[in-house]
Length: 457
Ligand code: ARG
Image (cartoon, rainbow, N blue to C red; front, side, top):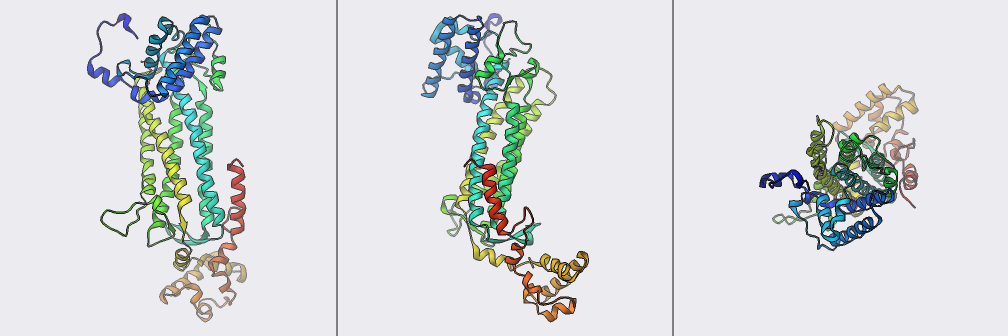
């Protein structure tokens, strides 16, 4: 392609380090579509003859079909997707193919393709996240009143409902979607027409091409257009944050599925057996989702280090951008789908959850709150009194509601038998009616509202 002043071919290792076709061929559809829009614009502007533009359009259509039918022969010697397509175009339509690259460079072409690809990918991730939210909301509605221990420090804290716990992840996924949607705004600006770096002397119409390709606008500065990759960093940052959310839920599934907890059962569809221990049901999918965030952060780190300190404008370093983003997008597709699958698959186990609610004096806060409400005791003092009651229950190895009134009154005489009413986890949960709280009525309503806020009906 730059044969004019090159007599010899590249060293084998030069060709090997330079080639990117195995990675960037994934952008073939975007490359072809953008070339067609570019050629149409060149013709409309009188830069290209109508005849050549037509040949280019038809030749590119044919190449698209060849690639989609799996008969296109990709050549490593042609380096990347752009030169593979252009070279094949020349075979099909002859010299007119050489006019396609007028007023364009691979520098603006590659990042244009990349932005188009990423835009589609963000839309797919958004759909996948909506499906994940739908799975969570369905589970939340079904188990809006199912009690479970809520934890802080992974120690029993206060009872909550299983539905409330599911809805926590709906909110996280909602913010993830918002982050991707916001990133998409900055992805959806068109670099094409920046040419190599400085713009072009040809009378091109960038608005027209931008409209054709669904971009919001052409990028305002040609140097920025060919050399910026913050849109990709931003995508990877959002991907990493989403990955942390998925990994937290994955970790909870691993814990809940452990027989010592037994809070959920996963079917054979989402577990694996062991070749040596016949009793095993391992939550491999959850473990893998838990691990995947490492790849995502790795991708963000890799691209950020590539971009750090790069002088304007384009440098070949930037060819390293796509592999990271493609890997992250693949990782998310798989992780989100696996997670939605596990949420639909898992069956909460009421007996185990009830058993767990017997541990850890989980309604101690309700006891303290009662002392405040019914006996007018300041919360700090109520906390102290409750602590002594808990210690007594520990000594007697019994639950709070198994202590006698006499025992409790020995600690504080203001306690009456009304206290037993608040020690029941179901009562405790039902009383948490503050906005955003875990009372089953709230959870039902929150699930309905989440459906409206996040899902198309
Ligand atoms: N394959 C290259 C990339 O991914 C395309 C741009 C090449 N530009 C250049 N001036 N060599 O970045």
